[in-house]
Length: 155
Image (cartoon, rainbow, N blue to C red):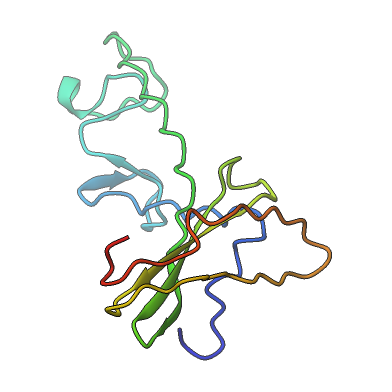
């Protein structure tokens, strides 16, 4: 990570701000002139009486043409994905943290899974992970699936 960049800053906060809407597609007709983003695609109108039905743009719906089908509802935004973080990678031992917000992006609950691997020829016996968090955060630590990390990344 670069200096001054906190890659974990949004894990304990609300969902990230939504992205700005995409600019209109090219090939449209600028209704107000000046190119300020008020663009309808060529061949459409508010009630279906547009370019394809008579050559003019029917802005107020006075056309005898049937109304177009309503636009499909926008898809629900996906939950933000948090990148895995390599917390430790030395002497053949690697620890990777994976993050999720199972109760939704606005939830204060963040789940952190730690995955351990051992590239060495011998297992790591009596392996334990110690965790330290600020007192104002609640924590629930579950037991590791094993007390040993198998050799040669076999576990």
